[in-house]
Image: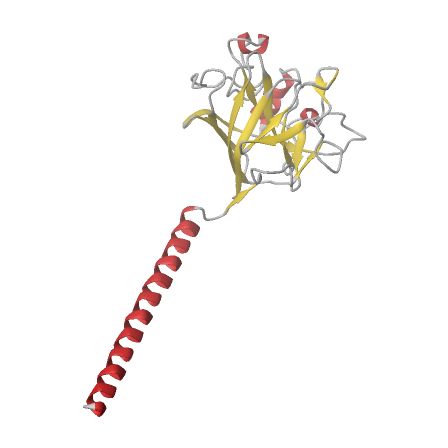
Length: 250
């Protein structure tokens, strides 16, 4: 009886151990599968905003982000209580890295009567250029109804500012989040607003140069000529929020 009891206990222990190992393997495989799925879905995308700090951003010509740029509720926003002329003490904030072919995605919302923009292909030579918009084109961010720019052709939300009007108005009302995308690949430029391709053009060719010559940027010789540069969020002195900012190199 004693020997049989010992054998039975030993067999039961082996069975429990095998079951535990099987469960552990199943859990491990499930974790690996989830990680692979996440990697596949987000392949190549890099977050430019951690949702908590201004790390990775700096004001144009500075080493850190100006104090007017703050973070709350997972969004990067502009505090307009301290102004210096038409801007705040924050200034336009730029990415740490430069990009040539890229796909940028982010969300924005604007305060009533607000104005801002997403500027790209910036040359941050502050000796030659006082503002980042003297070199880089801009996807307009604005309250179409409340800000004067919203009434001007080629100055509406989603426009390639002062160059091309968006094909259709897809902007959401003030206070609501908009999904914006900028895709630049070997000179092919596409702007998306709330899932719609609102602007499509080719940069740097003769038609591009002619278009700039007929715009407010005509006296800025380097505007729209830069093929690799930083990306900026504009401080136009009005409340604006940005979140879920990510980029993929193409």
